[in-house]
Length: 220
Image (cartoon, rainbow, N blue to C red; front, side, top):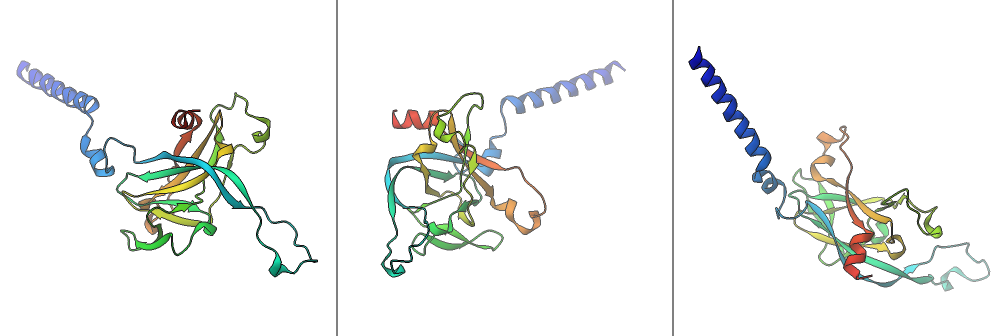
């Protein structure tokens, strides 16, 4: 009886040590299987530059006194932040994108692991990806000109896929990166969008770029 009791205590002790070892030293192979660089997040953003660029002004009513062919698109300079999103995961990821920012020169067709043909960015291309804007702390105030505009999400009508190990630059309005405001980029992993998973809702994935990071990077 004492012998069996000692064996039981020994087994419990061994199982406890094994459990503690897993907690203190998590399985590194898990990150190897999911991350290209184990030291970095699966998806992350980095600041590229700050500057101005020309964008089309919102179109109003067309004047009937001037022939349409003589009317040129009106543009305006907008302060813009260029951000780069990195796909450090071992799957392709999907973003929403403004279809007007797609062209034959900045995209190409690629095949996913399940044989789907998708649109992917070429090297050094820029896009208007769909992103969200929200408050960091809802108890803190923001400037009056943004009170009614935040939070919101810019929707993308088309999908753009970023392959494993690749990155792409997207554009954010400078006015949306202010104190107590942050932007986020929603995305989906390749396996979440396959036909076998289309009826199963997965949690929404987001990667954030906050005012604090912007302030520290730019040196404001």
